[in-house]
Length: 578
Figure (cartoon, one colour):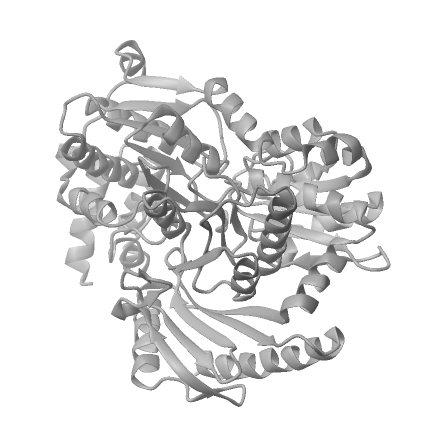
């Protein structure tokens, strides 16, 4: 971008940004004539990805700040008015997590909506994303907004938009909202004083009136409540909310069931700087390190961690000797929860007719084998939990019964009353599963291995290439173009027998998926490699899933599959290193 264009955009932004900190950043860069940094902040405007808008906190159109929040919300308000049609009937529930500026952005969102005669239900303090989804449905809102950057690093924040079903916004709503956002001029943005919004009953603060029914719903997720009541006190869990929003509900629900919960003190309280963490993400081994060290000291039976908005759940379990703790992947925990829920419901004669499980296309195929062995239909959707919620809504119309939704990135849904991944409810079922295993003289690792012995061993791995800035976008685009033009003929010495290009409206299990920038390589032994640019981070992600059939000794099978993963990883890294 040329200097004149940069100066024009930056000067315009300074004029309309009301927050002194963000305005001052850009003013300083203009004074210093730091055009490289200004270009990074203005070469594009933040756009919707798989989870809404997400970006680095700071001044500029390519950053998240009060101006971008207000402009986005004005666009949302314009769309709601068209969708609802009757003036004054629109309403939006708003939540936020522990990130820096989250409460500020949440209030700005509410005041723009109120100025547009749209009722805003704003939580009085931070809440988990799944509770926002629950609130939208419970209150009958038109839409919902949660201010969060989920698991991203501390410098990020975001704006996640849900529609009236409580699921994250999908086509056509997402594109139409963005169209309205882009059409909004700075002078079109409306706002209202907080006091006036409250007086006019347009701004309504919410807390216990949503907390209590949400917690009741969470408690109903116990499949064996008597087991928790009788044996709960024998289970000791170390939990970390990673300085996020999960503590009050996860601690409350587990302790309410009589389970011992010890929370990592350094990561217990909300803190948007995440001082002990590089990434507040339970997928990252480093994020769970402090909890695992505490678990070793107190000899815990289970370690749990949730990300700042408490929609992702990660766990670690003791090894056979009880001295070290093994991190369980999202694919593994999802598979365990599916098997536990289906086997329990079958035993109780409560497995519904036309039962369904929904997973993402990059999530392990082990889950399909488990589901189908119980007579349950397993559907695949694109990456992003919004697609799981969207299919849930569609399947309701056909009389199918949702049981479980999952994606490999530690997202799990065990209740039909929430339409987003819910680490709170998943934590309840995971704790109960641990109690069940104990009652059978098994560890959670024993349970996982018994599943592998029955269905075959699966191992998944993920490799990411990070490409930051404007040049990074071009690099990722070219990499995907090259892979389409010249697909992998082999990976890890295994021939590619099928290439799925999800830009071409592929149908799976009778469901036609919308176009998406994803490639999937099916190898001759049934292993798969998927590649997609992230919708929320400057990354291209490669998902490896290797397998072997049951019948051999488990240790032998693991060795074979680990070898496949290692060879495929080497091939992918050679592409990323070019």
